[in-house]
Image (cartoon, rainbow, N blue to C red):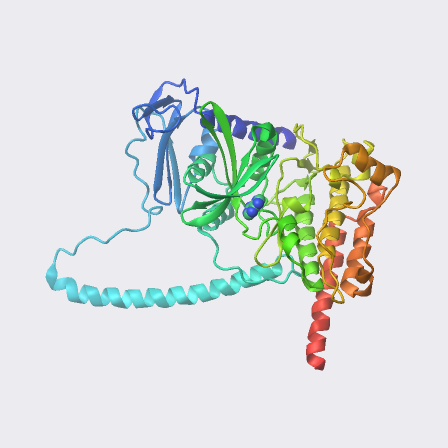
Length: 501
Ligand code: ADE
C-alpha cells in the first residue's frame, strides 16, 4: 500500500472507530458486555457490541462495548499506568484482572511466623536503605541526563526549569517512546477525557470554548469545539493521532473525545494547560526586554520549523503547514517560550510518500493574517510550498506584535493587532485585499527598533517574511537559524560584558 493510501486507511479506520464508539447510539452488535450504568446506551449495567472492553487508567476503570473497527490498534495497548483489554465472550469484561506489572504494588502479605519478624524487618530496613540510595543516585543521574537532552534539543534555546513533568506526561511519553506509534489508544484517551472535571472557562470564541479542567489533580486545557467547527476537531484529532508531534514549541496533546449528550455531539480536545494563556492575551498586559523578545520569537520559529519539516526516519513525520498562525493560536509557557496551537486547518505533505492532504475543512484562515496570494486568490493550492509561505507571512506579523511590546530606550508601544491602523476591526476580505495586495502596505515599524542590534535584526527578518512574491520570503529554517545565531551572540556579549566589569 502506498504511503498516502496507508495514511488514509489508518485515519479512516481511526476516525470511523472514534465515531463508532463515541456516538454510543447504534450498538447493534450481538455480544452482551458489562458497562457503567449511566453512560451512552448502557442500560441496567449492560450493552451490546462486537467487543467488550475494559480500561484501567491510574486506578480508574471503565467497561463497555464497541463495534468492530480498529480492534487491533485499540485493544493491544497495555503499559505501565494504563491497561486496555478487549474480549469477545458474553460479559467477559466483568472481572478483568489487571496484570501486576501495571497496578502499583499493594500492601505486602502478613508474615506467618512471628519468630522471623525481627530478622526480616532488619533485612527489609537494609534493603530499603539500599533502594533509597539507588533511587537518589538514579534521580541525580536522570536529572543530569534530562538537562543534557533539553540542551541538545534545539541547541540555542536557553532552558528555564519548569518543575516536574506532569503525570499525564509520564503516561504519554513512556507510551510514545516505547515505539508504539503516535498517541495513546483511543480507549485510553476516552477514559482520560471522561475523568476530567471542568473548572473554569478561560476562552470563548467562534471556535467554541476553552476550559481549564483537572485530571487526577493536574490542570489540563479542554477545547470544546462549536458544532459548526467539527471539521477542525476531526482534522486536529487526526493529525495529533497520526503524526509524531511532541515538541517543546507545539502544544502538547493529551486526548480527544466525542460524546453524545441529549442528541447533540460534544467534541473535546484535551491538551497541556498554560496558565499565561495565548500570546495575544499575554501581550495585552506584558512588555519585555529585547532578549526575551528574541527568545519568544525564536521559540515560535522552532515550533514552525518542526511543523514544516518532513522527517524521514524511524520517527517519521510528514511536513505540516499551519494555515492559521496568529498570536491567538500561540500559547505562552512559564519559561518564556511559546508553543503553537490549533492544527484544525493544517495541510499535510510527504515528499517521500508522495501525497498532499489539504483536508476538507470549509473554514479559512484569519483574514487579518492572510498573505497577499490568499487575498488575491493567486495561491497555488496544489503546491505544498505555497502553504508554508503563507505561514511565513503570518510569522512576520506575529513577530511584529511581539516587537511592539518590547522596551527599547525606555520606549514601548501599546498592544495592537497587525494592520490596526489600516483596516477596521473584524476587517472584510476586500478591505484586507485593498491594503495588502492593491496598496501593498506593511505594518509600520517604530524608529526605536532600528537602534537595537537584536530588534533591528528581527525587523530585517520581518521585512523578508513580507515579500509580495511568496517564494522570495525566508523559510522557517532560515528564520530559526538567524535568530539562534543572534541568541548565541547576545549570550556571548553578555558573558563578555560580565568578564569586562
Ligand atoms: N487557551 C487556549 N488554549 C489554552 C491552553 N492550552 N492553556 C491555557 N489557555 C489556553
